Length: 215
Image (cartoon, rainbow, N blue to C red):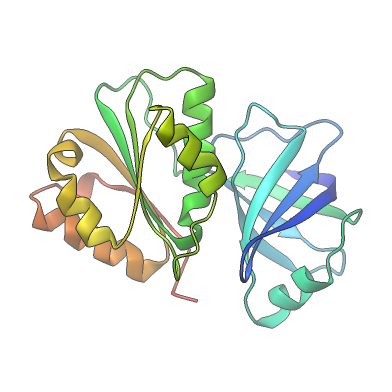
């Protein structure tokens, strides 16, 4: 499905990482954890992850790592007020429903974006499951700390950052009894799976979302 919207805000989150806010007159309905195919005014299209929760479909936030090539050129030229189209939503990085226990999220770099969407959704829906977010940032640029840190201080979630192997080992008991979801670039996901294997968790049960090869 193709939907037209207006870019209302372009916010830098870290060096080479932006958040785009796109407003839709009729709203854009999606499930937390999904992504869209974003079409720039000049026709270039790229896949971007939705970082906001579906409870506010009128203004969707997209998390973008700015790379080289035509996509990078297009995002650098993009200005607030531009009319764009998005195709989707797509993706099956979806939170299992009606399960017991906790949910543990493993995030690498911009892989935190779909996890932010899911976590905000769970809290808004008053999901009774405990939430743990284990995050390996890129070069210590902790994305969305302004969301996760207050939630952690309030005791609504557990939020830890560092090398994923250390975080998994530190929380091995909790992880073994939880649903585990991981998002990030391929090298991160490979390391996350090996870390799960090292603590005796089943990597085959992992729900994962790849952002492709390393940038």
